Image 1 (cartoon, rainbow, N blue to C red):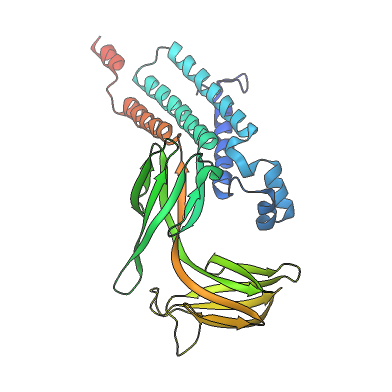
Image 2: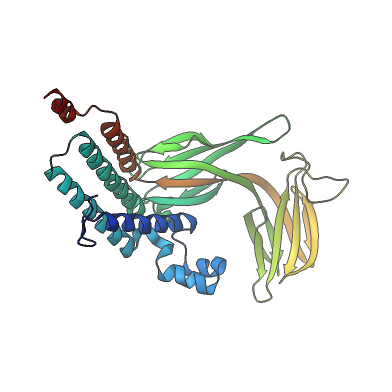
Length: 339
């Protein structure tokens, strides 16, 4: 950018650097603060005052906020104005390299804006055999099914790799089936599905006041028994139960001796607990609980980021600009030396 002694004109270097600083700090905040959550979420995790400030400043949806986009547009105009001035001066090699570097910033910025406005990302948890409609997550017409899940272990039973066999039904009626694992996502027309986490789910039922309440919950989940009295049933799955100690710490990650630990809780108080085998029915304070079975669930991150290609193009222009400015021979200087 060119220096301008008349103040912060559109092509001023000071203005460009100031805008870059503001946008950089803002983007850093956007990467640290979870995006797209409800107002209650920010008040819960950041406190009422700071949570309200985050929502007020649109830091909860930063890359789509009017002020962030406006600053980006002003910076783009500043870079274009500066580049046009340089082109008018018929620059030599270094000048053209500088122009490419200026334009590369503009391209990277454009890619970031496209990612912020049109990019989508969602985390979903799906049990083996279940399907989830991704329309509500920002991916209309896409339905994801988890057909199977497996874990590869090291000899010491530390997890080595997670594998999810998934089927994606697309909005054009196609069905794509893939096995994905950590660092090996499913890719389809800009959509990527990453293996993120996993866990156990348990299913069964509770008989309360003569009514059967089925459950199919993740381990550690709670089932509401009586909302008026805040009575809940907490369910914890132990894949390899230690009969000797009777603790809830599993001896191994493998389902060699599965148990379901059931705890009846009211408010913050534990009323009574019971440990059930698969297929067993037990009773806690008159509530009959049946442990029917268990299965894996997988946590998947679904992403679509149309701005990534533009950002990569911007980085390519940065490399080209550096090469032109510092590595390519300056023909104008060579001509001057010859003459």
